[in-house]
Image (spheres, rainbow, N blue to C red):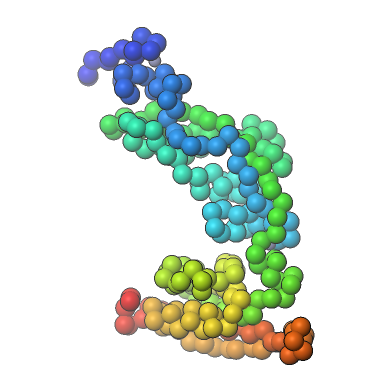
Length: 239
Ligand SMILES: [Zn+2]
Ligand SMILES: [Zn+2]
């Protein structure tokens, strides 16, 4: 066993010393995690119920799952010389509501030794409308690509990562058996489908046009739905 040194702050012996301080004193003076807000506003779509986590709008089955999604999306940045901070667990300090206080249990590490710190954060729900509900309501989306088959979610994610942000879909929604990808413009949808075909074997199984009224220019407007089946990985491999 190695001898314990004493903390320069409180004098107590401590196995972990950060700039001469025990984790508790270091946390009091410098903080262990950087830039963690006291309050976090979370956009929630009042129409479909999804919450915005980073740039994505996600469904959740229970409010607790929603809280978990939000908390695990936060970047827990360690304060030097702390090397890593990860979320180990959390508990509600107030009941789930528009403002909910949550206690975070964080595990920090320094030179192979771990210690815990805790933080409290308020999650404030901010009523909003997600992009999909906006376009659905206004009838402005143009093409829906329904990707179906095994590994649809992963394959779509890989394709989206290679797309020009200008070509990004309005929304991507996991559904039973695959993913629904909504596009504003037909051209972007076509490029998405062809990109999909370059990394996976795909079969376009159905194209449906649906008339959705008349545009302000007096033209008949239609909406297109393309069903794409994934039939395993491409023999050509990744590009
Ligand atoms: Zn101390
Ligand atoms: Zn919505």
